[in-house]
Image 1 (cartoon, helix red, strand yellow):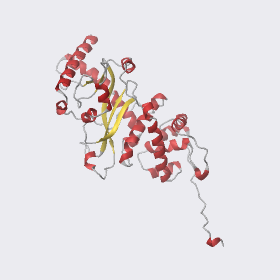
Image 2 (cartoon, helix red, strand yellow):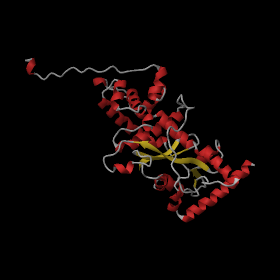
Image 3 (tube, rainbow, N blue to C red):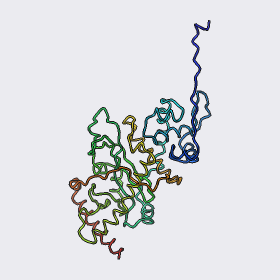
Length: 336
């Protein structure tokens, strides 16, 4: 009789791997206690144990292993003792949960608190943060693939971000193809709209790839006088914190340094989620052990585009140049 019955085969589950404490941070980029915190903050724990169900901590570990490993999902699955499809489903679940709370951890503000935070650590007058872009390598999309090919010759997303004095990301825009220039991304971003409507007199620091405005300071391209050199020296010393943020982000989550090998419609979520986790690492004081290494790993500076100013309203540009002169004089007075 048994030969005619459809008897389900017995399932065998791979042993769930664990690692000693001294290796844990290298594998998951957070301490064991902080991974528990992340799991509790983003995920609901389940009492389900049938079918080798994963608990919240194990799901978070799989996601962290995925963004911490420049390899493939099958490798993460073998490391964690689960099938590749389980890795894919788990990454999607955790990604969704992190994105649902991303607004709690990445917030762009133009209030006095942001300026006081900056002035407590840095000297550039009226500044509240720094803005820049970085390229995140992706596989070439099947549609409109050439639009994603940047000037370095590889496919990427050009990701705009701002950061504050605490080296936390305050905004991140990860939707633009690699061929789009930084200045165009800014012009169409929430940051631009919010700064244009700002009542206070605050500003951001940006490199020479941007056009100057009253709320976006850029350095002198060819400083001639002592005053201009002093301005550029202070400007460069303080603008570099965005490079440190990008470097810390890519070092903690190597998937952003090497290549994000998932469907294009989910790449932006991975980038934003990593930025959220970066900010949480600052909140939890969970530092990488190699913080003294070069900050911005292989992140190349955008070439100066002399034509960017032509995309600006002439009156806006003139006011920006005038304000830079005023700030230059103020900086040099403070240096005396």
